[in-house]
Length: 90
Image (cartoon, rainbow, N blue to C red; front, side, top):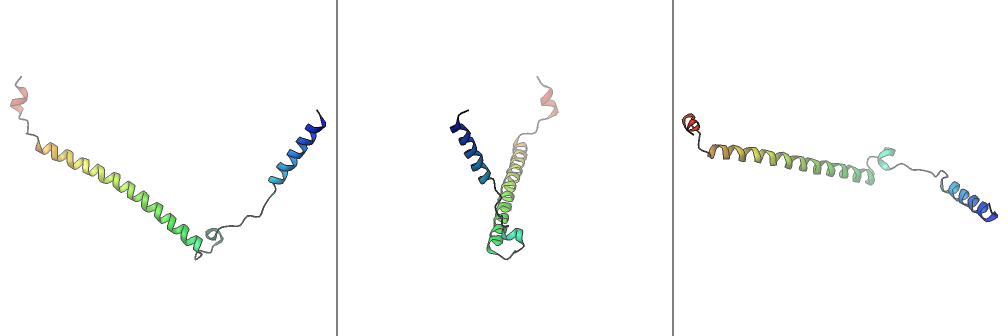
């Protein structure tokens, strides 16, 4: 192995080691317990908005199936009733 390759691997190892060093991590306002902070209020509004979207989509799917059931019932009422005598005449 050449001297350049050895130094290249050493430099690469040094760069990887420096990139993997621990850095301080700070918690967000919600995790730190400051529920009146603007970030926590914004996160709560985001959660409520996503909950409303999910409820709207599920409600729309449910309303569509109710519409289909009502339409099928109306179509069944509109058909003439089949009599037993007409069913046997072939």
